[in-house]
Image 1 (tube, helix red, strand yellow):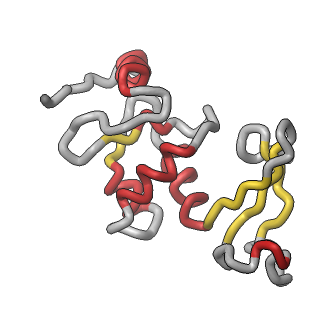
Image 2 (tube, rainbow, N blue to C red; image 1 turned 120 degrees about the vertical axis):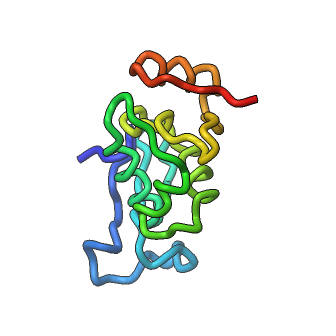
Length: 132
């Protein structure tokens, strides 16, 4: 089963009573370890990251949430900067990171560039107010 673009699950600590493999002893206790089918690279996704992705996946087309609201809905209201970091590293097109904006109404960052974020939001009929 594919989960994260081209990544396949190898280990999910939430589904297992076993300990993490020895080479991941420093990893968080609630995480998912994925293997990239193309490169063979392992990726560790924390429980919080999984919650952030779930919240962002649920944002409807044309809607937006702030980084702070995503953090609140993911269970860590003060972790809005962590939300930005998590979303910046995401490359899965099924997670609409462009629908997350700053609390002051400006776009904030986007790993494909702010102009693309603006264009995507406009295509979805969201009126973007750019504050300078």
